Structures are given as structure tokens and as C-alpha cells.
Amino acid sequence: MITLYHCEGARSFRPLWMLEELALPYELKMLPFPPRVFAKDYLALNPLGTIPLMIDGDTRMTESSGICHYLGMSYGPTPLMVGPDEPAYGAFLNWMYFSDATLTFPQTLVLRYSQLEPEERRNPQVATDYAKWFLGRLRAVEAATANAETLCAGRFTAADIVIGYALRLAQTIGLAKDFGPNVAAYWARLQQRDGYQHAIAAERRAATEQNVPPRVRA
Image (cartoon, rainbow, N blue to C red):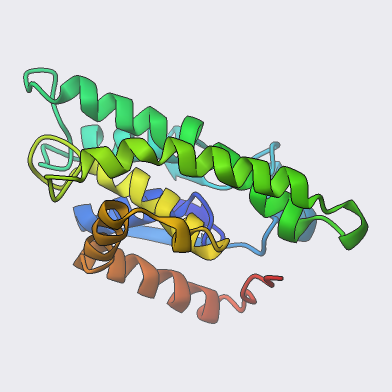
């Protein structure tokens, strides 16, 4: 049984969504955010204290986009993956890495310096600068979805899952209002997928069953 450690709205939503799209059985362990502060026992499993942590037999992984890639390759074949024999293989890999390194990274600084830090340590200038950075990089998604329903290969893939999470995070921290028209329409389409809705429902159900309070937002 695959076990996924998850916090509401965190990057671990990527593999949770992937698990739902693949219809794989899994156990979802909910933790308060951030677990390195509020769930000290978790450090025995993941010394970094970060989310996600996925355990699948002897395999342990902590990188959200990498977990999605692993699940698709290990439990396929699936149209969610793009193979090296397909013309879109390079584009697929680029989106998989772009999702966290380029899109999620600046958002974590916006979140930290606008909401997570104590009031006296918050920094509106840092938050504003990194919000602009994120929105500037989002131009790649705006261009890719100008004439296509999905990012690559002419179908929904894991690339849409990992980029889709970045859009969910943007919505959470108040940046969705600045989406371009193509990104806004693309994000609306992603949210209609059964896999996405099932992942949202699983997140809420597990939090209720495990008595993990929702994240407090400013």
C-alpha cells in the first residue's frame, strides 16, 4: 500500500491528484502545517520535515513532481505519461521540472513573507517582488494554452497535474486574480476533472477523520 504524507493545500497535492487519476489504492496521512513545527514525530520519518513524503515498499520520495513521475512509470502504462518515443517527450519533461523549480519556488516566498512569518518579520516588498517573478514565468503557461486544452502531447498528462498544483497554490495566496485569460480558462478546466475533485474530497475527508485542523490563513 502506498502511503502519502500530506498537508492541506501543500505540494503533496500533486501526488495525491496523480494517485486519484491512476485510481491506485493509497493511505493518506494528514499532518498540520508545517509538520516540522507541529508534528515533531514526523522528523523521524523525514528529517527535513517537508511535505510530501511518499513510501512505496522500499521507495521513499520527497519531491512532489518526481513522485508523480515515479507513479506514472511504476504503475503504468498510462496516458498520463509521455514516453521518449513521442515528439512531446522533451516538452513533457520540461514542464515536470518547470512546475516546482520555476513556478512553485517564488510562490513559497510570497506565502512565507505575506502570511507565515510573524507580523514583525513579514516583508511586503519581498512578497510583491516574488509575486511578479511568478506571474512573469507564468507567461509560458499562458502561451502554451493559447490554442490547446492541455500543455503537451495533445492530452491531459502528469505535466498538467504538476503545473495545475502551482495554479491552485496561486489561487490560495491571492495571485489568481492576475492570471491571463488562457491560464484562467485552463485552470477552470483542470478543476473540472474527476481526479482533481476526488483528490480535494480525499484531502478534506482525511483531515476530518484524522482530526487535523485546516490551515490558518491571514
